[in-house]
Every structure is written in C-alpha cells, then in structure tokens.
Amino acid sequence: MDALSMLFDGFVAVLQPENLLYLVGGVLIGVILGAIPGLSATMAIALVIPLTYYLTPTQSLIMLLAAYNAGTFGGSMSAILIGTPGTVSAAATVTDGYALAKQGKARKAIKGALFSSCFGCLFSSIILVIIAQPIAKVALKFGPAEYAVLMLFSLTIIASAAGKSLTKGLLGGCIGLFFGCVGMDASYTIPRLTFGSLKLSSGIDLVVMLIGALALSEVLKQVETVALGQTSAQLPEPSCKDDTRFLKSDFKLCLPHWLRSSALGCAIGALPGLGPSLACYIGYDVGHKTAKHPEQFGKGALEGVAAAEAANNAVCGANMIPLLSLGVPGDTGAALLISAFLVQGLTPGPLIFTESPETVYNVYAGLILCNIVLLGITLLIYRAFTKICSMETTIIFPCVLAFCVIGVYALNSNLDDVWIMLFFGVIGYILSKFKFPMATLLIGFILSPLFEKNFRRALILNSGDWSIFFSSPLCWLFWAATILSVFFIVRGKRKDKNLQDGL
Image 1 (cartoon, rainbow, N blue to C red):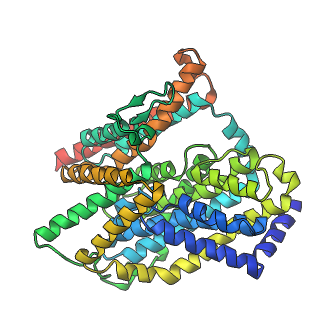
Image 2 (cartoon, rainbow, N blue to C red):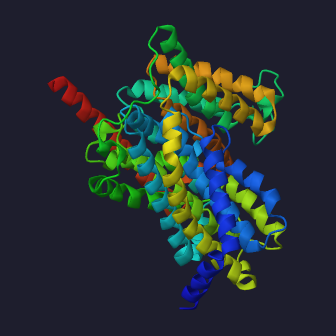
Image 3 (cartoon, rainbow, N blue to C red):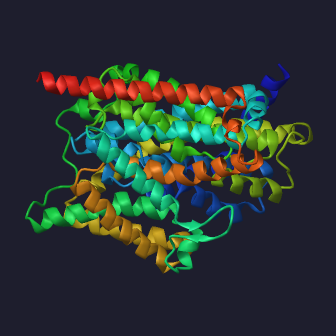
C-alpha cells in the first residue's frame, strides 16, 4: 500500500503545471527528432540534457524519459510515410508500415504504430513498478555464455525474415555479419577490413548504415522511376473512411501481438546491451510466426506494425529496470540517462530506492503519463505529416535526401559518415534490385558485434573450453529455443514449397 501511495504522490507531482510543461516539451522534442532520419531518440536525450542542468530532478528526468519514449515512436512516422526509419528501432516497421501507406492506409498505420507504442511502454512501465528488482536479479545472472547463445537464437530471425528465397535471406544476413566485423578487433585491438582507413577502425555506425541501406536506396529507386517517366504522388489518398481509422476489429487483431511483443520487449530491455533495435525484429519475427495470416506480412499487415512497435517501445520502460536496480544501462539511451541522474546528484543502483524514493516514483509516474501525452500530441499533428508526404516524389524525396545527409553528418560532424551512407545506399539499391530482403542485412549487422564479443569473451573465461555454452539452465533454455525456432522455420518452408508445388 505504501508503494501505491508513493506512486499516487508521483502522479500528483508530475501533474503540477510546471512539471507537466516539461513532460510535454520532452514528448514534442522526441517525436520531431525521432521522425527525422539520423536524429534518434538517443540524440534527443543528448540535446535535452544541457537544458536540464538547472531543473529539479523530477523535471529533468521526466523530460528526458519523455523524449526517449517519444523519440522511439517518432521513428515509425517516417518509416511509415517515406519508407525511411527515423530511428534504428523502427527498422522492422518499414516493411508493413510503408506498404500500408502505399495502399492509402497511412493514417491507419500511424494510429496502429501509436497505439502499439503506447501499449508497449505502458506495459513495461507497469512491469517496472511491480517487479523491477526481481527481474534485475535474473538479468544479473546473464554472463557472456548466456548472451552468446541468446544471440545465436536471435540469428534464426534471419531465416524467418528471408521471405520466399531462403538462400537470398541467408546471403543477406552473411553480408550484414561481414560488415559488422569491420573495425578494431575487440580482443586484440587489431584493425579488420579497414583498408587503412582511420575512420573505419571504429567500425561502421549502425545509424549511418541503416539510413544508407533503407533511406538512400529508396531515394535511388525513386530517381529511377522518375527517369523512366513514372512520377506519381508519394502516397495515394485513402479509398474509404476505414482506411484512416483504427477499428474495433483492428484492436482485436493487434491485442495478442501487443501483449506478446510487450513481454518480449520487457525481457530484452531488462538485459543490458540489447536495446530496441533488436527488440523490434524479435517482436516482428514472433508476430509473423504466430499470426493467423502470416502470408500477409511484408505486404501491408497491420499486425506487423503492431508487433514491432509494441516490442521496441516496451524496451523504454524495461531499460529502467537494470538502470535503477543495478546502476547498469540497458542501451546507449539509458547510459545517457545515468549522466542525467548524476548531474542531479543521484546515483542509480539499489541505494536510490532508500535515498530518493520520491524521485523514483515520480519517474515511474512520468513514464506512464508520457504515453497519454504522446497519444494526444500525435493525434493532433499526424495529419500534417501525411499531407506533406502525399506530395509528388519529385518534391518529397529530394527533401528526404537532404534530411539524410544532414542527419548523418550531425551524428559525429564527420563527412566520412556521409560517404559511408552513400556506399550503403548503392549496396541497398543493388540488393533490392535482385530482391534481397533488406531486413536480413540489418539483422546480421546488428547481431554480429554482440555475438562475437560475448562468444569470444565466454571462451576466454573458460580457457577455450566450449562446455561453458552448456553450463547453465539459461544456456540450455536458449539452446532449446534455437532448436525449436529452426524446426518451425524448416517446417514452414516445406509447407510453402508443397503449397507451391500443389498449385
């Protein structure tokens, strides 16, 4: 009862006009920066932190968390409207979100993404309030071996995302794994595949690669259509009112995916180092496997948008579990939040619950309330975004190209990043022409450094003995999940082949 009364006091504190103003400001900053390709939710936090030096701890933290949550959602706006994810965490949303937009259902897709994002963050916020410490204790048991086997399980997503051609999907995943190896060797500090470039010694930035492979490749495809005289409006108008509405039937369709993806996002967010970019793909993959009509995924399935967005936003609240309970950041955004705590004289970790319990519960309340604010603000402004993106491709895509260049350059103020983006734009264009699924390239790139780092660290700790990968119940659990995943993938591919042979 004491915890409930403190949470109630937290809501009262956050709803004070001055505090609420900072919450609304954080949401607006997050949505706008998240929607611009290259300017991520992490950058929203980085830009807001200097503004919070002279604020109270409550004002500072709720503004930052609102920017983080809204920025994670904001990436889905551009993913749906222009086929370019504003943030890495919205990469899986592009497939079905953009397909829906090209069918005249952009408003429905945005509403689906919005409701999914709010549900996912609200779900994880409630989990954070109830079982923060027990989940953090489980997360603490994860060592390099457990992470390595978990990454191996995650690599099976490549086969699921491969589409009709498993060969092309696996090849795309291998290309992603290859580019993920570029940079300094983590164990021996030896440069790999850098070709003497000092810039490449630090590896390829995920955001730069993402913008190039998805956004710039789409721009190049649109240039091709213009050259062939096939110019048209970027997005068609809705054919009926239902194309703009999120119906009761849509709610029933998406609810199981919301629950499932939110739970997955919570589990991933509670594990340091994974983050929303992995959660969105795992959520999408599980949603695809459990959907009643999986054949619609990739062609404009609202379920695909719901599964990805609920998962990536559930990470936002769950990231606070290891941060508050252990003082360990879940991802880059959470790492920046630690600096915000320290600026306010607070040290994240077990002692914060006894030293500053009021601030902790104010943070809980702010995280919950920011979903309501995000819902209201987005419903007010999303029509303006859709109108802009309904212009002709000859107008909208030069603007997209400009945003891509500015956003990528703003990451590190380095022109080399722009050239790397252009390189991946050409790679993405070529792969798309040969119908390679881009999702497999991105999954391989995201998982490559995580898998390699934990795999090698586990072997070093166990003097090269491979038995460490079978040394704990968690390892065995992930091995079983990997085997089951491969089994269902092979069975699904065989069913598809038999169906095609029958036709």
